[in-house]
Image (cartoon, rainbow, N blue to C red; front, side, top):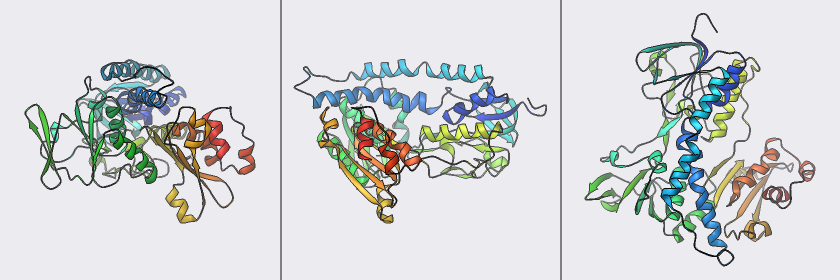
Length: 444
């Protein structure tokens, strides 16, 4: 440990941008401190990815059972309260497990809110001074809240994931990842769902024809979409809530979810005091994840960049900083292909070059009608299609798929995109048959 500082590396925040790299860094002999005001693990394990996928599993199973009606006997429905309880059983153990992982590696966890005093010093809960040679800002994102009258009457994603009783009428403001995933869950679990869009587009970062397939399916299932809603106010009305929108129109609902996005969690961190540059998109860093203040770095969702704000990106950055701080590399970070998926039913997954960019470059775009491919007929998927993009040399450079198995199909193709396999190399890959991976490679 440095004689001058309490720690060689101090992380602010204990999510994936921290613990995936902080634990092996501590094991390498570097003195590591981790400051966390909430649950160790941050958003993903406690109020994000892990929680939502647990709640989504019964949705996925129910949809499949509906398609196989006549083969399977009996009605299957979701008990929302039991689903929430099951979710909690799965995630309750995660914070302690991650705490043990960090502490067993030699890292010290400090509970509380951190604020910079100077570039090497933070004050925890306005009383405890902690110093470090290097400091990593890994505070992630938090839910955005609409700045309108009655905004305190709305709820955020964490509230939804802890709803012990599902409201009869649920209104979601926003149509990004969170809005669409939660709309799918609530609709399948029996709620009357309305989604209010800021514009006329849903899931803007995904291939729109595939998004429309998902939207059309949700509409058939009873979900209402209000485009260009221009939400203006929330108000309490007897035992319900009133939303004012559009041209002085109103909508009455039992519960409001504000899913209008997520913003960098930087309030009261004291970045202005030490001169770290940032804006509403996050902290500015160079190609070594270093801020404009030499000894201060940032990683994960709080960084201002064009990468998908997903767990694998935070994991990769955390691992990179571990290698940088332990002397294993001095090179700039080189990002791999980072896939993304929205867990609607069906899912939409993508990796590499987009269809729009491929059209601009004149690359070959292959369309695969998967709903009529035998493997997708096993569970009678009615919505299943993919587009694969090959460059002028025949390398697979991008893929997007809409299907119940889209995330697994895209995962199977990632090595080809990342390592630029040519046709001969692709043909040398023999997957397990029958499997979704084999089906994906067979089309590549």
